Image (cartoon, rainbow, N blue to C red; front, side, top):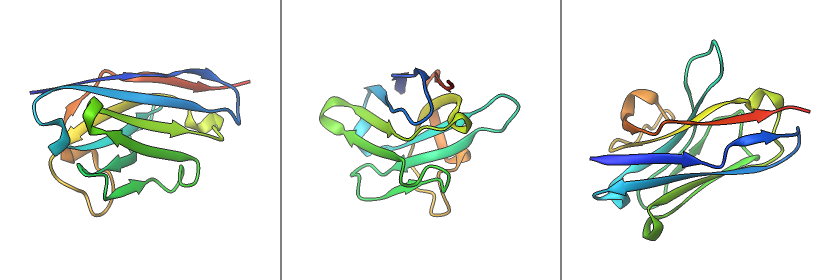
Length: 125
């Protein structure tokens, strides 16, 4: 069983930055693919970025490429999402999730088995 806890969300002005953290507890964290997802009110949950167990493979949604950076520290059982140049449309609840299968067509919700409770990110002036 793997448990995930997100932190680092908050209110930020457009153009600002935030770093989200996803702390994991449980067995074999370093064998899991970790993804970041977000869900805005009235919209479906979407993949933002995902990183393979060794960090060799990384994917980003087109909407965040060049602005967000995902990384992981397996020694600390933690995955990070550095978000820069934030826009109002980035406002959402952000979730991290863990799975065993790499999605070659993107970070797909259906491939992830364990989910955190989410952290709110609001981009507004």
